Image (cartoon, rainbow, N blue to C red; front, side, top):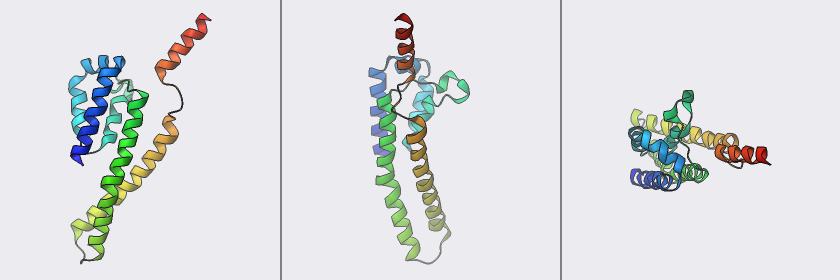
Amino acid sequence: MIIFNFMLTVTILRREINNNEQFRTWFQEHRVFCIFIAFCSLGNLNILHVLNCKFNYMDIFDAKLSFTAEKKIIHASVISLIIGDIPRFYLLTYINLNSEFSAIPMTSLFLTLLVLFFGFFYRLYESMIRNYENPTIQELVISKKQFSEA
């Protein structure tokens, strides 16, 4: 799973650096932070959303990810859920049903169930709140300029 997340993280960030001028500018200023977040995303790709979460209106959390990158992060997290979390839940359920009580497998099963539960609602939140059908901020600014000139 780590190799899968590594390949997707590198692909998404590389595409943004090559094709998105705003992200490239942000990356040049916050290179160490971006590499740290990329390293953390090896465990979970949703951590890449920290780059543009706009926490406390700080510039370091305001990377201008493109619409395509946002969609790729969401799609990759769904694939990660299907490939990694659901089979893990199945295996832990099987182990817990076919063996005596043991604290570690039971705790692991509980935590995996929490990951699935929160992952499902997080993806539901992403699809409703982020509303990817709306234009991005840059497109809105351009539209307002064009409107005022007309």
